[in-house]
Length: 450
Image (cartoon, rainbow, N blue to C red; front, side):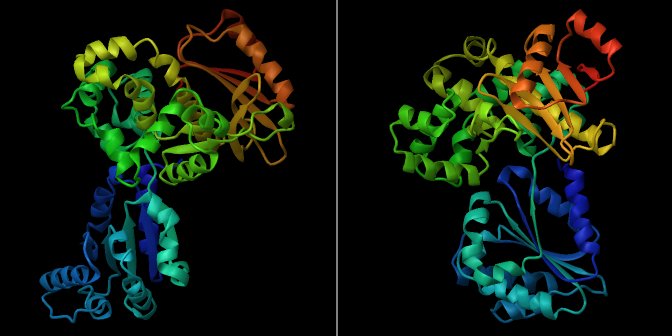
């Protein structure tokens, strides 16, 4: 759980270190990395260059021109001479930012090799920040492009999406319920959240931002996928199948008609792009009662689009947005959002754990996926003590029967719990309220507490 403030502090810590360094920072084009870079450079001696889609010769020409223009110098058209002229006017550490570095790196390793020499030889102090917006390429291909020099990168930072807490802070006028819905639909993507109007209802935001043909996210799902992946028809078919509930490789094979080998390759590409993830059950002694890993759409907005919009695409073009919302989204939205409420509950317990306010010091946390049941939250310490949690989002109240079912699932998972957390977006069975008042190991958490 990393907030934007933490990422800013991490960059500052690299800058304050008494050594030269090369830092790789990468994240989606929707992550607003440019604003973070701009904020980081304020008050520092530095140079920012945004690489073009260009040949190696043209890239070098553009970099040379910008350096000469900013520093009023004449440089030779080679990386070593260009970088040697990047100096601060005093003894302050210099920051060199090469944004969209993948556009340089894909053409050859000359630039990076010159950066390695710059880092080694500069005595006045330099921080080299390489920024990529191609997540898939950074993870799969960058190391091959740089070869053995890749290990010269001192640290790697992936820009994370905003947490639920960040979303709450961004929309102070929203209720917690509205924040959960916003988070479930958009995730923590900076650019998407900027489109959301806190003065309008969740329904109106969906209709205006996503469903209206003039809305900023109307074509976003396919624009996002095609920005790094080809053969959109194959990826859309797989994502549509997952959204229908086919979460295992064999189910996808039977549903799509693609071979298992083909599906595996495309799933790896989607995973490298942070679109899907393989969810594995939290490991307990009850492994024989647990499901094997299942595939789910990780990207919140892509999941929403393929669950509610993609299957009804024809109607999207002939119906008014509010009519479409009433027909296909309103009745099933709460059930769909349950999984994201579970994420919020995980984050809540993680925050308590950071503050030392849990009965154990949790070292790992996850969800137990049983063959006949699920434990939404399991936290475990170093000596295998546990806390567990059940999350109720869509039902009028969390019932006593749900608590009893949790006991059965814990038996199947072969665990016991120091404390049971019962999360409810609405209310609690009076019997649970009475039980919690008598037993401190049972904790009720409502929306106000969240």
